[in-house]
Length: 206
Image (cartoon, rainbow, N blue to C red; front, top):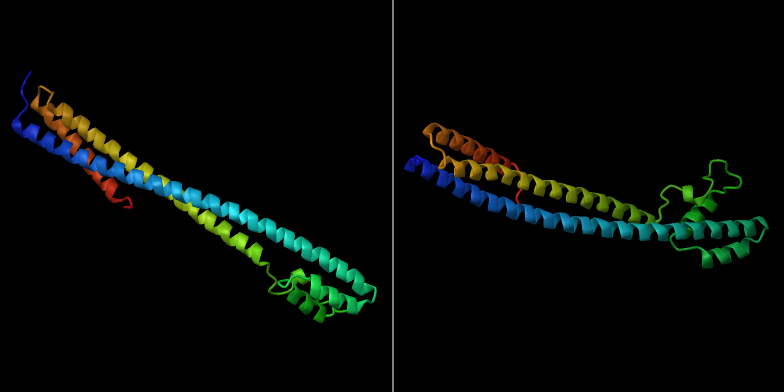
């Protein structure tokens, strides 16, 4: 078997050294992005749970507001306005009461332009419902960030594939008998190293 030229061995050694170093770095980045992915997925899950709780609370509050309004409306239609005022001040939730007062001021029984219910008044809002929407949006953002982190990790792993090819080509270059083949596989190794390095530079660092 023909001994490889010292220059071939030197180039192969340099290529392998660089490929090993860059592979280690890519493995480190892939691990880091894997941690980011796990944290973001966990955060998104927490936000989803909290959003569900807030949505459930909002539904309970809206149901209570609707049933209370219905009961007060029945008393009002019976002409017991004083009772309505007393009961409204006691049983209407503080968040809902201003909208009921604004709605009653529009004389909804005689004013066709008045909204059908206080829930349709301009500016009506339920804080728990809005909180649920906000948490749901934050969960969606974190979920998207987790997917991006997962993709970044996969891309770093893909970069190591190029460096693995460099190790392969550089390793066999010294085992070949013909100088032409030795140089050819070193060219392939160099190309693989450049492709992996360029791919790595396009990825975000963490």
